[in-house]
Length: 81
Image (cartoon, rainbow, N blue to C red; front, top):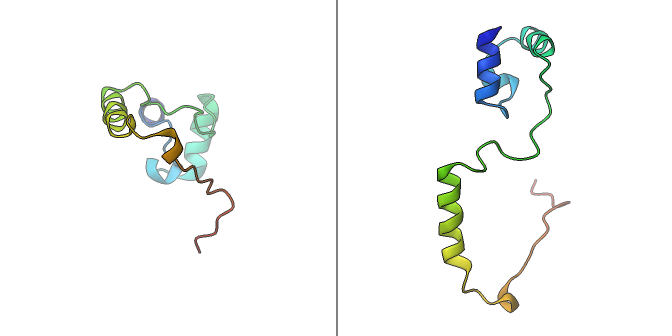
């Protein structure tokens, strides 16, 4: 049970397939540990050094783009199939 707890805490967005355990067994353990299967609202690595570095690199690329040149695309409802 502690191993499952450590796995879920280390990988909060992992699916049951990624945890490589039986669905019924994993669900039972997760219920006893009071874990939910909902995804986190905020990424767990949001404040990591890597993410901060990538944000800085992105900002350096786009900071000189004029607002008039920006185009925003909403892909909701788009069918790629």
